[in-house]
Image (cartoon, rainbow, N blue to C red; front, side):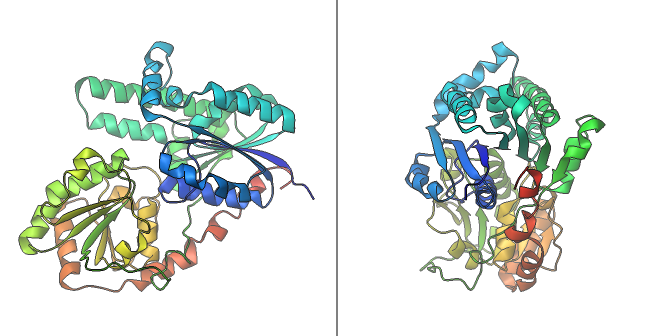
Length: 397
C-alpha cells in the first residue's frame, strides 16, 4: 500500500548521523519514512559523505543529491550584498535544486513538505499555495550571527550584524508562511517568538533531540583505544566555528591551568575536518587532535571527563547528550547546557576559567562514575519519545 508523498529538503545530506544537525535530520527522516514516501533533496558539502548515498534509499522513494563546493558557495554568498539578501540564502541558492523541486512537486503531485534548516525553504517559496509545509529551524540561526557580531570589531562586526538582520527577516517570512515551525527546545522556540508577531506564536513549538541510547552505551560493543591516555575530551565537527571557538577558549584560558597541576594530562579534540588553527595545537602541551575518527565512543568511554566550553551556541548540544548517555561527567558552560534540564553531581556548569580548571582537576584526581547521567537520558531523551509528535504535524500521516 502506497503512502502519501512528502518532499523532504535538507541543507546537508542526513547520513551518516555523525554530527549534530545530521543526527537530528536522519532521525526525523527515519520517523517520517514510516508514514510517507519520501522525496529527498539535499546538498553534500563533504566528499566523505558520498559513499553513504545509497544508505538513504532504505528510507526514500527518490533521492536527489547535489555536490556543494564550499569555495563556490562563499563566492555566491558575496552576491548577497548586491541583492539585499542574507549571505546564508545566497550560499545555498541553486538552480539545479530549484528545478528538481519544481519538477518533483509537479510530477508527484506533492502537497506536503518538510524543510530541515530554514534556508531550504527558498526552494518551495513558489509552491506555498499548494503545500502544507513544516519547517525545522533547529535553532535560531540569526541569533548566532548576533553573537558573532558582539565579539567582532570593524568591518567584520558590520557584516555579522547585517547577516543577523537579513537572516532574521528571512526566518520570520518562512515561519509566517509555514503550517508549523519547530525548534530544538522550548527555550529556543521562546527566543524565536520574541522576534516574530504573536499571530504566528501558535504555530511555533519545541521538539527535543534524542539520543541513540543503544549506540551511546558504555557497555555496547566497540573497539577500545590502545595505548592512549584520554583524560579530557571534546567532541564535535572541528570545521564548525562555534566548536573551534570553544576549543580555542579552553586551550587558552583553562588548559594551561590544568597542566600546571597535572603536567602529564592529555586533552583530546575529536572531530572531523579540523581547521589549521586546531591542527596546530596537536602535540603541544598534552593536546591531541585526532581529526575524523571511525567511532567517537572509545574516546568518550576512556576519558575521565567530557568538556563543552562553548562561548557561542544555540539549541541543544548533541555532544553533551552523548557524553551523558555514555555515563560520563560533563563540565559545560551555560551556553552549552542550555535546553538540557539534566542536573546531577556529575554535571558541572561554569563560565569561569579558574572554576572550570578546578572541576577538571577534581575529575583527574578522583575519577567518578556518572551512571545517573545515562539514566536521565534513558528516561527523558530517547528518539522514539522526542519525535513521536512529528508525523502528527502532517495530513494523512
